[in-house]
Length: 318
Image 1 (spheres, helix red, strand yellow):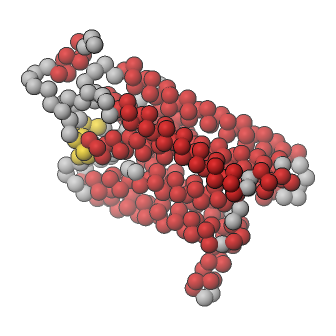
Image 2 (cartoon, helix red, strand yellow):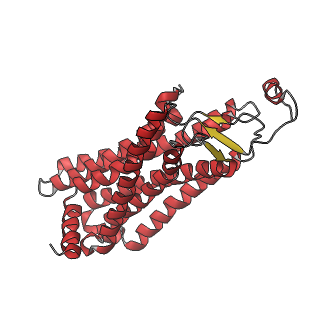
C-alpha cells in the first residue's frame, strides 16, 4: 500500500493515536443561544414523537383506516420517528453540555442508521406512489393488487434495501484509519464529514460515496416525479367525481416527497459544500421533515380528521 504525502503529514509528529471519540461542534457557540435552541428543539422533538405516535394509534385502532394507503402511512410515521430519534436527542442534550463528544461506536451507529432509515424511507415513498398509481389508475383491481401480503412484502423490501444501503456505508467507514483529527463541524456524525477525518487521501472515496448516495436519491426522486406526473395527468383526464379527493391525496404525497428529497439531494449531490447551509438542510431533514409529515397527512386528510374525532369521542366520552 502506497501512503500519500498528505497521509504522512497527518500522521507526523509522534506516535499514531487511535480515535476513541469525536467532538461535535454543534449549531451554535453562544450559551444563551444554545439554551434557546434546547427549548425549541426539545418542543419540536416532543411534537414529532407525539404526532407520529398518534398517527400509529389511529391507524391501528380505527377500522375505517385499515386500508393499504394507511398501512403504508403508519410505516412512514414509524420510520420518521426513528429518522429524527437517530440524531435529535443527542443534539438536544449537547446544547446543555460543554464537551460535545460522541464515542466512536456512537458515531458509527449514527452513520449506519442515518443511511439505513433514509434509504428505507426513499423506497417506502416509491411504494406509496405505486399505491396511489394503482388506486387512481386501476381502481377496480386496487384491493386485489395491493392486498395485505403484497403491502407487507413491499414494506419489508424497503427495510431490506435500507439496511443494505446503511451496512454498506458502515463497512467502509468503520475500516478507515482514524489517527488524530476528531472534530466534526456538525451536530451529528454526517458521513462526508467523518470520511474527511480519516488519515488518508479521502477525496476520491468521499466523492464515490456521495455519488452512490446521490444516485439512489436522484433515481427514487425521478421515479416519484414520473409516477405522480402520470397520476396527475390521469386525474385531470378523468371525471370530476372523486378527482378532488385524489388530487388532495396526491398533493400531500408530493409535498412530503419534496421536503424529504430536496435536502438529501442538496447535501449529497450539490458539488459545493457550504457549512451553514449543510447544517440547515441537515436540521430540516432530521427535525422538520418528520414534524411536517404527520401535520400534512392529518390536516389535509378528511379520514384522518374523522378518525381523530372518533378516537376523542370514544376515549374521552364526547
